[in-house]
Amino acid sequence: MKVENKFKTFSLAATWAWMFFFALLPFALVLTASFLSHSDTQLLELPLTLNNYRNLNHGIYLRIFENSIIIASTSTLICLIIGYPFAYIITRLNGYLKSLCLMLIIIPFWTSSLIRSYALIAIIKGKGVLNTVLIALGIIHDPLPLLFTNTAVIIGLVYNLLPFMILPIMTNIERLDHRLVDAARDLGANRFTTFRRVIIPLSMPGIIAGCILVFLPAMTLFYISDILGGAKSILAGNLIQNKFLIAENWPMGAALSIVLTLMLIGMILIYLWASRGNKSGEWL
Amino acid sequence: MKLQTISRTSYLTLVYLFFYIPIAVLICYSFNNTQYSLVWQGFTWDWYVELFHDSDLWISALHSLILGLSAATLATAIGMLAAVTIYRYRFRGRGFLYGLIFILILSPEIVMGAALLILFTLLRFPLGFITLLLSHTTFCIPFVIVTTYGRLVSFDKNIFEAAKDLGATDGVIFKKIILPMLWPALAAGWLMSFTLSLDDVIISYFVAGPEFDILPLRIYSMVRAGVKPEINALCSVLIFVTLTLILLSQTALRKKS
Image 1 (cartoon, rainbow over the protein chains, first blue to last red):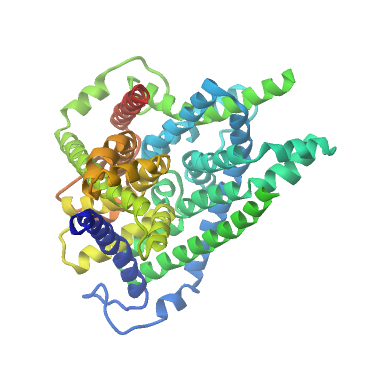
Image 2 (image 1 turned 90 degrees about the horizontal axis):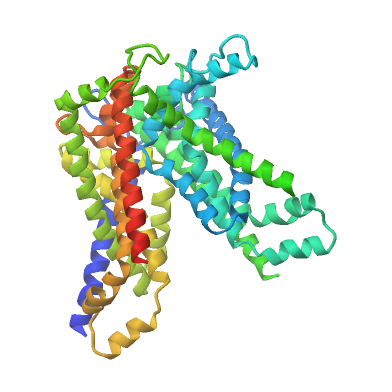
């Protein structure tokens, strides 16, 4: 009996030790730091204070968060609009073609996101590929000033995060009970009504999971706005990075990180709520 | 019906073009015989030759390789233990651990980077290889757990019962049954960790020290300084290496299964 439990004790201890030291403890430190103060000589010091959270109300932070939320929501919406039909079409393919299409979405996912963002510069810059093609086709006359704008950041985010929207939606549509779709058609619903009233509600958990996976990185991928954006395209991620590594105001950076974490928790709760509704739907 | 097929095919094609054109253009420009212009000026290997002679770059690449290999191996070992533990045992806090893993996958990398920076600073750990290794292992572990756990769930539980009845201890079951059956998932988890480690910018940006320069951070600072043909060449080489790795692993896994 004693020998038998040796493996269990060892693996449990290793798992918990790692999770405690490198996940729970660091997060507890961020939470604590967000209530501390700082000075020129000390990165973190007492007294405890709520000032970091009060300061979030300042114009500059509000403006950056607002801009970041607008950029992130726009990117999420575009990913959803492009990604949903894409995921839907792929799940209807069969066999070899389906695994090929899936493979082709996963390949960019494995290559460096930094490199792919850099690759976009040659496409969207003033004399880049996109403008050259559009002018040659006579669609526009003057090159679009895309690079170093919020639009460039949104293009970069969509380009990097689209697979994260497609994959959860695909998984969800695959598991969807197709008898429900057939039933809707048998009962006289046309294609569009079936899609809107049956397929979309049933794939809600996939949609929400995709939105979580796109929205939060879209607020924090600071190198994308750094490479593609202009002076005004500052994401919440750039702000946090600045507070920690340049301004050395760790308590403020920690408070901003906590705000992001609260947003994550809120989105997870929405997801849990939505997927509970879906399960009861499956039993029908 | 035919019209539907055409519109579906063209939709898929358009999205794939969006994915792949920038990469293709980048690779083309890496052979372009000009320093500044984006207009095609003829074929050249110059930028690759220049890369080859940049010794600092080789050092960062070597650092990244060492870091990726060790972080992936450590993460696979711990992730595998954790997945087996969660799968086989019912213990207090199991649900909590399970939730924690998903939160780690979903949580913004920047929060993890900042949290680890605070931890290492308070512990007076000098930033460098060790801090990078610990951080990379931490963000890779959840991915190994998810891949491994997915494979474990597909096992027939009776095998473990049979082994136990025949007198095998948990350690023996792990060595003789679980490990051999798990290896494709472990290979997949290892490879995923390796590429995650090679590509990570955000967390590394927080926990890297000046003495241990790694490739993604080096590329980041080069890119911020402006577009240069050497970067095109470097990125093309990296894309080629990653693609080869994926193709090799896919064929290896397919042969086995």
